[in-house]
Amino acid sequence: MRPTVAPFPTARFRRLRRTAALRDLAQEHRLSTADLIWPVFVREGEGVEEPIASMPGVVRRSIDNVVRAAHEAAELGIPAICLFPYTDASVKTNDCAEAWNPENLTNRAVRAIKAEVPGLVVMTDIALDPYNAQGHDGFVVDGEILNDETVEALVRMALAQAEAGADILGPSDMMDGRIGALRAALEAAGHSHVAIMSYAAKYASAFYGPFRDAVGAAGALRGDKLTYQMHPGNSNEALRLVERDLSEGADMVMVKPGMPYLDICRRVKDAFGVPTYAYQVSGEYAMIRGAADNGWIDGEKVVVESLLAFRRAGCDGVLTYFAPQVARLLRAR
Ligand SMILES: NCC(=O)CCC(=O)O
Image (tube, rainbow, N blue to C red; front, side, top):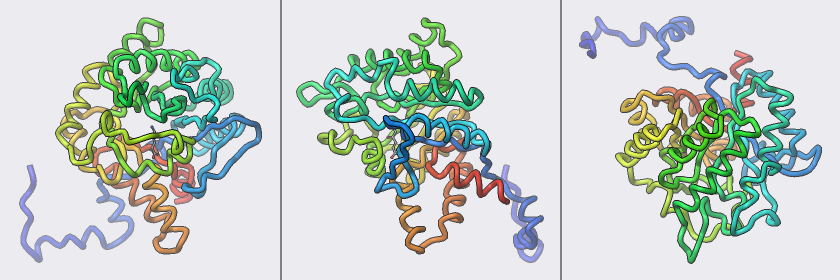
């Protein structure tokens, strides 16, 4: 119940804002390094750190450098890293077979991290787009994205990632029925400990633009993803999707993108009270970073404020490309 606010001057809200210590005492939500998941781009090669033009400060790393990033994450206290492969056109096919190759880039990177930094949580992405000549998250036949056939492929992909040692699988594909299929397959194959963070409320968003550049998908994609990702105008549908995915065995749920969808984060947390995450996506990163690089905003302050907003909206954690910078900032405080 909300207490009645006494009239002025009995109530003076500025009393608790008077000093830094009082403000600290009264602060309702806090950002901690333990809330961060760091998305990292993996590519072939050795000793490679390749800049991404539309995401200044973010690089594609060869596996040896991904392992270095994993050490850095662990040293900074970031609990989890999330891997996204940058795939060459030569491994993109219509049957997407590279997605479940035990030796694909992601699976090799997972094993390399787990061998060196076993305590770090490793999350992987489940969707066919990095391996699909058509650039879509599912199989494309006559211009249509096939649901059930795609789910079967996602199961193969998930089992290969679980076998490699992934701790959290992140199905980002938005096919119907995939969470139940993944959960059943994981149980049957002895991977009952592997968690699923469902990209439950994933919107068909223009904020993903720089990511497609980062993973080399921009050129392959024909059309849009509106037949499987959510329309930005919808809100109740997000709750139905979260409910559905939880009922099928998701352990954690995600809202994506982040900042334009904080209302959805809050509704999900209020309705279900489950571990809830948001993805501050590439376009959000690019906007903040671009404005900061031009001196139009104070980048450090805006980043921390933007991440605190996710906590205020009910999120337990955030996937953010700013993770290492923020962890360093929080450590310095
Ligand atoms: N499945 C992962 C993404 O689509 C990431 C989007 C972004 O960072 O823009």
